[in-house]
Image (tube, rainbow, N blue to C red; front, side, top):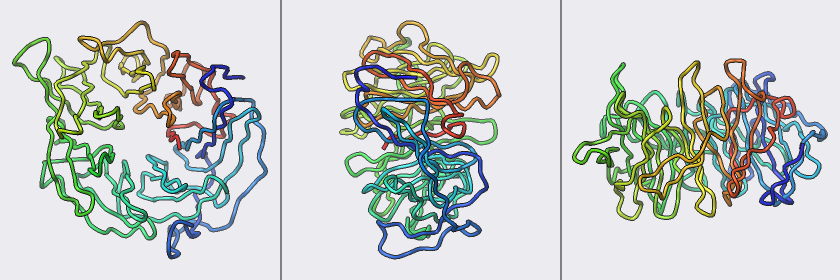
Length: 400
């Protein structure tokens, strides 16, 4: 099958695919590190490599690279181009499903849900290092310098700074103590400031979420921005954003953040932070078709949003959005329906294309499991790259 949209002409894409083999990985040294570090306990070090195998899929365009993972953690490299291929990664697999990832100096750092951080060299198709951290239910990481990352957890309010060479904890910030956090969501760095999503849930009770502005060097909280804005439809009334967790989306001076709402009056919000002021902008997009989901932006002002519904199962529906309208709103009919909850819309660096990983967790989905690509210029939903071709059902995608 072919993607023929002009914005993808002459493109090649590289994926790391995590599929279902035995749980193993490598303890080799990361070429970006000064000293060798131990691998993860119990992870085999024997190399696995294979010749590239052809795929029934082609894209043309500038080179694009993606990290793709599923719940079982096998790594593969998929190169998309005029002649697409898949290749086993030398060194094995991660011990748990990948949850997040970042790139630094040509190295891909992948965070698994058990806290393992793996360094992957996409050029040689090899895991060069995999180190454990003492972080349960790891959620997101951000690289703050050449050998250091900060990591959040989905089960506590502690932000931890770790050494990427050893996995050692170098410091921590207890945002439960500072901000009443029960869990932390996504991270990003803008203008040297670390933005941390704060969730506040105690049992069945959910309280207003927040974003903490943190100085990375010493994990000092510079400011706490509460997620509440005035309701444009009811002056004087406030809308609260609960449980922020989707990826931040940067757009010039703004950072967009997705949050759930205090039902039934409010089923979710898309909010934006003014980075220059370190404050929440009064702009808001309220969920109009179920519950608020993630956002993707194009280079020419195009925007796309996901809305979730819960009938008959948790489902995601992709729409064009009109963010500059007054008030902001959905446009037209759904471009894509998925019978699962899509929580992020990873995009290429130039924002010409974004991806929806479809894993079919309930065993049924229209078109089967795989990755659907959407070009932002025209909103075209392209044929799906199937899970069978990838070697596993994708749940995580990172453009490099």
